[in-house]
Image (cartoon, rainbow, N blue to C red; front, side, top):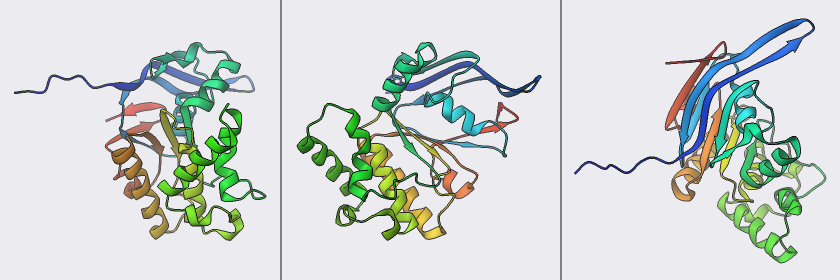
Length: 230
């Protein structure tokens, strides 16, 4: 019997366009983008530099606002939220993974992972439980008292991933997460992201230039001069 169950779309993008002003010039970056992302999907966004990949990622994450079109994440139309509402929404619903980790050098791995939880109403004991769970997921519980300078690049990125998942966000957005890593460390990070999808049901949206990294994704979208191709 054919499975008639419907997919659940966690991200719904319709007719999205974005331009930037440079002096008197208006530079189009994204043009009439429409697609959906299924809950629990690992999506890779690819394309040459300047194609609009990071801009699209920032729009989905609520960091930037579109000129026209709509984005719904988990049923919430984030294109209609105010800046203050967006800030609260991001804190609760989006985990960020960056190319250069963005860890605080004066904080331990534990303290870096705890940072997003300081904005919540969780008690210190509850925060500790969340942080230890997140560090266990990335296999770094034994490094929680280490500072970033005492960790390898791959370990720092794993701390960054623990920080991204510690609030149990609806989506994870990753901008070139393996771009600053050697091949072995990059493969470890990609395996970890794959595990987050398959074991924990996370939805990941990743910008990458790396075909090997994109090969881990379920779906690959290509951008060319701000237009979805293929």
